[in-house]
Image (tube, rainbow, N blue to C red):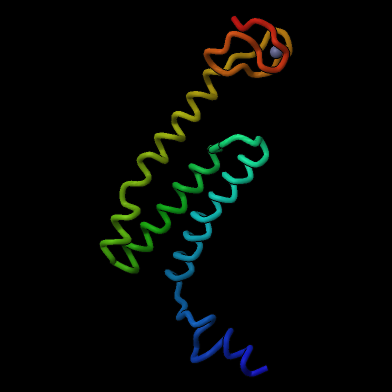
Length: 130
Ligand SMILES: [Zn+2]
């Protein structure tokens, strides 16, 4: 029993980690950043085709900005700071493109579903697109 409890709590450390508010922020940033892979994998398995949903870019943005804050204000480590200093640029650009692509969809006159831009026919009902 002591062996198990020592693994969890020992020398004022939980799981061997000395905790403070920034450690919590860092682990939350890691969890958000990691969760994007699960979201992307799930979307891909669901469609059986490689899909990168906008949630992937949101989780990338929020996770990397959180880890950048951890690097800047707690670690003060140049390697970690540079790892996350510029990644927000493609994340935001991809979110903008995602939004523009969604807005460029038109409504099908046949079934009322959304037709992707530059489509000649509705993928849902086959009616000719305008
Ligand atoms: Zn249609």
